[in-house]
Image 1: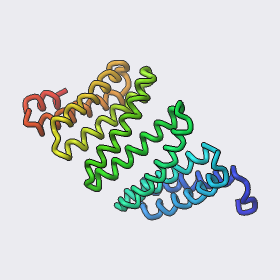
Image 2: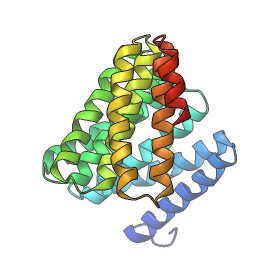
Image 3: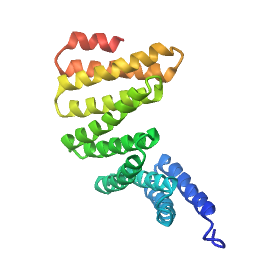
Image 4: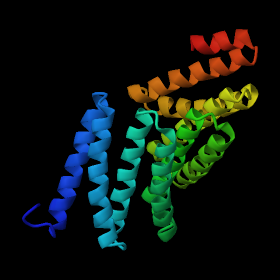
Length: 232
């Protein structure tokens, strides 16, 4: 790379290398070192994206780099900085989704960004703002799931989105609303589990859905119903 700095493929390979190093360091709990690796990845991704603003792959790479920086910052408890990184990723993904409204991948990426922003806001105690972000993510995922009802991945994403909204409502003390949201997630999880009884992920999701229903019922004072849900 040093001998041929104009070789874009080599630059991207180097960028991916820094990303992989960052992933390993995050898993090892070495947050500051991970953040340094992710920033090196980001610097290269930014250069590549700036050099070809019409290249959607380069732009998406840049959004992923901002996500990784945000992840490391969140792990380090630096929430405001993480939120700023996630917003930069969101801006790129919004542009990509707006430029090609039929591209389901861009729309899913956009939903993920809203979800990550919601996560930071929940951790920061900004529950109303978190709910707004989660609901934007949910709206996109609902459209994706409705457009391809046979896509189990879209449906699972939708179920997870309902769970995040339910969790935020629980934290806000809105137990009945949380329970209704958890029931939406449960309905999807039940369909997925019934459709593929050998899929351990679907069965695990279903068990988790019943557990959250139990939590919602318990918080709402409906203890007998909560116990029944937990037993499922």
